Length: 330
Image (cartoon, rainbow, N blue to C red; front, side, top):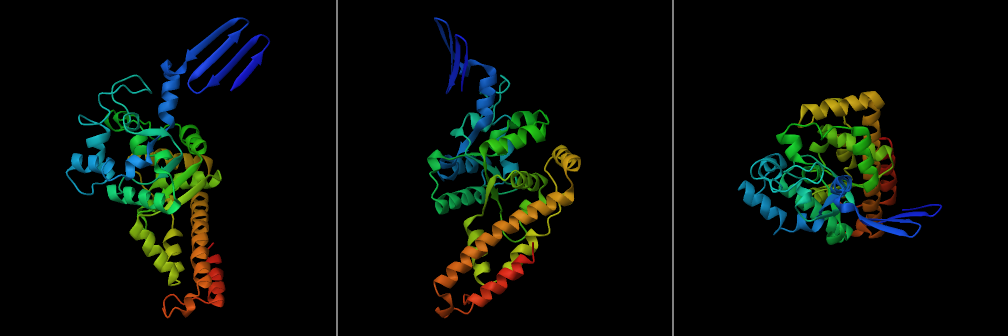
């Protein structure tokens, strides 16, 4: 940014502040200032390349847990906080104390995507879903950095010291972060009865993204993605949407009671459970309809009706009927 005022000139470029007043020139290194350090740390996302490479984070997590496929609740005290935390000996750039977020000590960069997910997911559910999305979308993993609460919040403060950082300032901090990043990945473990739709944080994140018209993409582990596509090819679209349509944020839960209380309190103050349920349902079904049309249009174009497969036979009139039925689900 630049600012002119008489003989005074100021500009910020990267991590430098340049001030010119008359014949005086001063250049300040912003990285030494605590406010800059905190803001930069909070803007970071985890390297996608690091997360999906089986020789990197997966190996670290499996070694620490001595399990093939631990969930993130199990990994937290082994990696994110406590005596064995990877950031336990590093100074946190956010408060100047020992013990930092994982994102401060692992490969990272300015966040390009926000991941909406649940800590109850297993390691391989997350890793394989991200790897599948990367391959399908032809994403450059080396230039993609994902804001994931497990890595990007300082769990030393939240879980070890029991601060309320995870749910503090929801309206300002969380929503502004979501909007500044601008792209959300919604990770479903399964398409049938997804755990995602039982978690209050997950539903709330999708609601905020939808209401703010933030771009979001549903991602699945490869087996779930394959199963979803096969189900759609068989014309069983209502099997998918019946679970996605039964959202009830009032019954959703969070790992920490304080988070559940904060999120639901914010909803009741600024909206309603009914509005959240309606908006999230509408946007998820909207995403699904796009996938439905892509798959069935492709089936028509490729002439699946002549392939000899009774499950894949799709005619134009059948496609129109299915569209009409799906429209009624809105």
